[in-house]
Length: 164
Image (cartoon, rainbow, N blue to C red; front, side):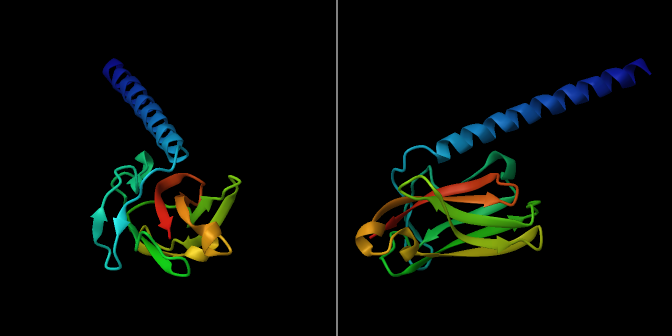
């Protein structure tokens, strides 16, 4: 009986310790997402990566191994065109939906698209219209940080898109 109590105590301590590490890693990931917007992963219309920004489209610690992200394509994007972000769920327990958006020049959340999640194994395609970044090419032009959240408002991934 004494060995069982020791084992249970050890298991609980281990579980709490790993949970704290995961929370710390998630907080660090989120802080990086809200950091300066610099660089972007350049892609063509066929999803080929031309050049990679190592900060773009990393998966958050809580979804590591459960979600795959294809970088936004094409990137850069001409004003008046659309780009796509593909998200593959590999058993990820997503809370009902995922939402893609960005922080505008006034740091206000601007949603782009919300996708309902009907299965833990699914492929979601988000459509990004360049006109959402500004009412004309001059206002929209520049580098923008995209943020993808799950239904529980946990950050899943982030990356940058260049509007030309």
